[in-house]
Amino acid sequence: MATDVRFLEHALSVAHAAADAAEGIIRARYRASDFSVDAKADATPVTEADREAELAIKQVLGTAFPEHAFFGEEFGREGDSEFLWLIDPIDGTKSFVRGYPMFSTQIALMHGGRLVLGVSAAGEYGERAWAIHGGGAFLRSSLHANRPLRVSDTADFGPMTAISTGNLKSMARQPRRWETLGALVGRVGRIRGYGDFLHYHLLAQGSIDLVIESDLNILDIAALVVIVREAGGVFTTLEGTDVDLDAASALAGPPALHRQALGLFNA
Image (cartoon, rainbow, N blue to C red):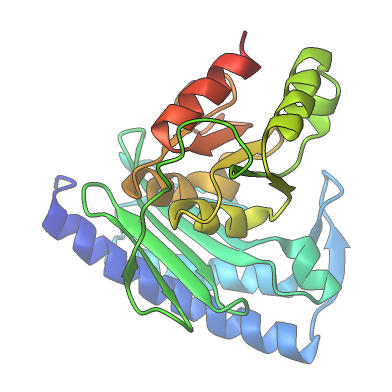
């Protein structure tokens, strides 16, 4: 089996079905506030909805691809295969718990260490983005059905440039990089912290120009990497390395702007 277009299109349809299954569980729990909150070992919250949604996703994917492996936020690694599904059933559990719809279901497929498929489903926010390697990126929302996505053509930092940041705790402890970020704030027209799925959706559709995060894990971004890249963007770690299972940071944007930002953060 190879990751050709026909296979990826089939895998994408299954990933959409898995996202639909998770969305039904998440929506019911969220709208009824029907969940309790526990703390995981890293002090982040987890709810019944997280666990139930991950199991539902794996049920759909496993039925279609019983030979594939899984890496989920709540239940870890299962199986051994060159095909690895990366699953974050609720990326943004803190938002889910606090009652605002800035959370999503992230499903990605990695083949031989390369990310080849991504679905980012933010049902309560009203958006879903997806992409397969070589097939472009698309967005469905209340305003658009299957809208092709394309990053902006912004090539320099200036008064029209918009940057969004995510978690920056590690960067705040790195004086040189923190100063670099501060200098960028003075050069651009807008700094926001849209966070989670949203700033990557905005980046892929050309509404903002750069995303910077210093603290994350691969399950937070795997699907979004494929979407941004298929929209014409560049997505690496802050060090400029490829996004793999050990990725802990993100720098994403149009090619020229990404190249400049990468040079500044690694001068």
